[in-house]
Image (cartoon, rainbow, N blue to C red):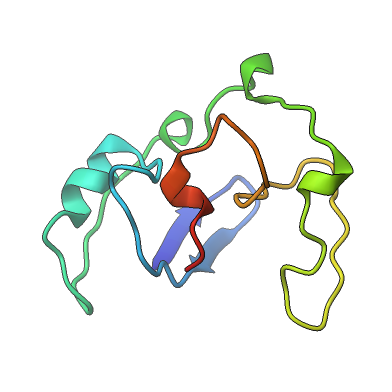
Length: 106
């Protein structure tokens, strides 16, 4: 997936390989989700998205306290990871606010 966007400073292109996208589990802006339905490899869609549709406003309901033991430091084979403030880690052990499907190994 190539995401092209403009900021006040530059033009940007972000590339992302989105394997196993799940429209039930994954959070996508509604317009993007509708445009992607029934598409296959190589298809292209163009969807204008306002900033507020991509980055949700801050909410204290989205901040969680975890134990260090819930973080798998060996997630990447051969590299030890340390949790960092502000990062999103989708595979946290014993975290009840996640869908069971998100916890399955890919």
